[in-house]
Length: 276
Image 1 (cartoon, rainbow, N blue to C red):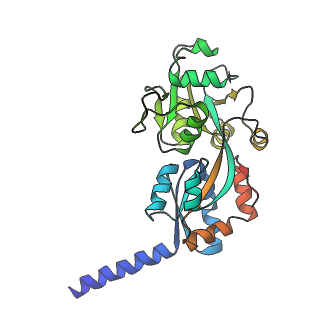
Image 2 (cartoon, rainbow, N blue to C red):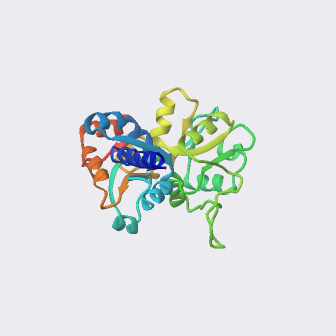
Image 3 (cartoon, rainbow, N blue to C red):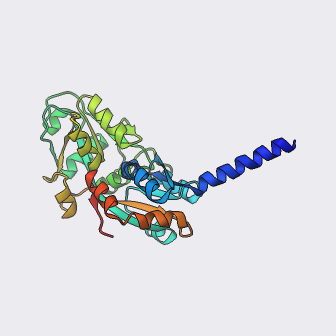
């Protein structure tokens, strides 16, 4: 019995030591790629391991609230309530890009066309100038920051939300629902005549790796570093890191993130870094 209790105590101490020497960062997959690139430099500098998890913006905030994560990655603008409750920093700006793989790459959409595609009014390719049959529409799962930005712009709401008002305008019920940017990108690549929306930084990175995706313009403006900076592209969102006010380990990482390497990593991955 004494040996058993000793082993339990030893395991408890080991777990406590691991916790002290690690920092759990959870949430938006858009931001995940940035933090993963910085895990080794941070460990080399601070001897603290970054444990990086996806799960979406709302999932990250839920873990933060439950003290299961030190920092939440949130790829949308924060509410006033969130800003007053937590410490936060905006590390970058990103665009939500509309992507497709149709053989006619130069797709120019208006806001009205985008809404009609996603509410089901437009179902056939010919209605947007493609030579094909029906369009496969790919949306995002609820609790994702990308979905929140898309909903705010289009006024369409995912039918998966609970307790929706009767007169709310919905995203079509047959839309595929991706959990992450990678899901969306791979589905669009694999499904003929499909359309979806993802982080511009991720879309550009996959384009550069020769994945067969095209990025559409909205109201005549293509997403780019320049049109994000000058706010000409209409679908722009913040990339935020959020932490509890009493978490010193999280605050230490945020202070470290003010360095030039962090900024360079953000820009290398196709986002617009925020000067801090």
